[in-house]
Image (cartoon, rainbow, N blue to C red):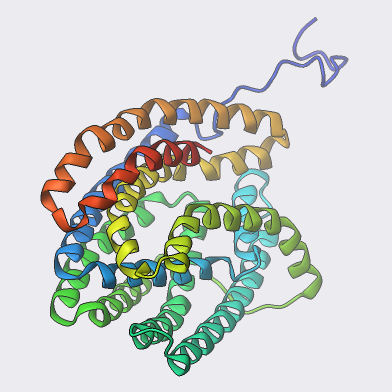
Length: 370
């Protein structure tokens, strides 16, 4: 019986090929563009992280690690609407529903701005409360940092939303150029500011970098408008909610160790600062996995929009994950065998934190592949 025979049942039909609609060559090309930019950015980021640990004491690095947790949690303030809108945009590339996708983007823009402002207000309140209580000698530093993070959150959410949409639209050259720009600015601005003014300088430098990123994105950003439709927002929350919950669970899982160090150790800021050297190595490994998956992820949704077949998407995801596992095994091994002694020699005051690599690297690799 021919594969084109209309009597052939869907269950008996041969499976669709596990390949992206734009072809493997385009996927490989985009992966190389993203990979090259991200690799350079990782090198710049690693140098930046090492220099920050030269310029700042472990206590300051520990507080910076804690403040970055608050900053990262701001990405989930949008209730999943931003993630759902990016998904709608990828689906539209497959099914042609551009008008509906644009309406979703406009709604997400409104929700993203409003929820970011609410989260910033909450952080301001926490900062004031911490300053008023003054429970530790470092309370005023934490309070200042939380107020700064409240401002940073508003700008960062705008930047990450635009980047998410550009990636969903497969504009990987633009996002890769931004990755390089941020890497260069972070190395120059953050390190100089931390060297001159310590942790307050680092926070101010981060704001400068985010504002520069936002300004650079303006000519490339997708058109957005203000819109509101409660029923449609509720639908987007239902679509993006599972994606949001998965992101929150993953983020909490990967930050639980930092939270416990700060919460249960008397000198938590110092201990987290020392432990951060192992986290730095694992962040590079996790970033390499994200580098590989960034170009693949929008193609899963595009394939679903064109074929409506989740099995075809699962087969494509399985093939790309197998490739990622083969690529990541070498840097994971090098992180323990070569990274450990090199960092112990380079930053002796952080060497005690490197013992955690034996536990962190395998877990990071597993989470990265997931």
